[in-house]
Length: 249
Ligand code: NAD
Image (cartoon, rainbow, N blue to C red):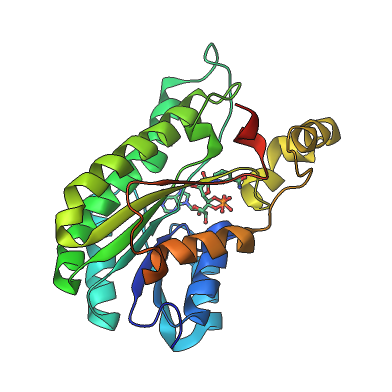
């Protein structure tokens, strides 16, 4: 028996990066996967690669109607949803003095309101399924501060708080809710922008005790564990995967 047999999983932001890696890992372990993302082309391409056990459904995590549509499509194709991975997110930096209100609200809307809407939308389906597991992707930025990251850091701290509240509220329904805090992961999110500046890359690596970034599949192994029944007694808990960055604080 595969580790995710019987699981119907919605993974947001799964068209690329860590979400795509989770989708591949989940299907390989027997799950039915809904690849949910705003990026249509890459999402459909991945669904085709993964075959009958995956579908792509367009989702903007900030849109409540989109969420209802994803749940409907998932139930129609595979049955009630028992796994939700709230992975979609965006990252932008600017000092508080310069960050615009519009940008602040956009980051909060995707990174914070998105997972809230997701947990709310999936609850009836998980109750129908007889239980489930939710994994919310925060960041080590959700555990402390990071220079020029006001909106991102605020949104990721919020993910930590709402996961704990959801864990307390949903335990009675057999639904577990855990939070993952990645450090630097090799995806388009860090491959763009400042990551192309060699001095920034060197400074980032110097701050990581393991002196390397992680590959997405290393995070997938942790997320898969949390999505599976192997983590049956973990809820409301924090799982850090950062090469040791937060060990010294
Ligand atoms: P990524 O940029 O490669 O992937 C993010 C995905 O989210 C993309 O496919 C994008 O289209 C999708 N997305 C963005 N806005 C969306 C929206 N409104 N609705 C639906 N989908 C949307 O980055 P990644 O590294 O794979 O990021 C995955 C998660 O991990 C994010 O929550 C991110 O904040 C978190 N994280 C990443 C790192 C890192 O170093 N890469 C570190 C800590 C935390």
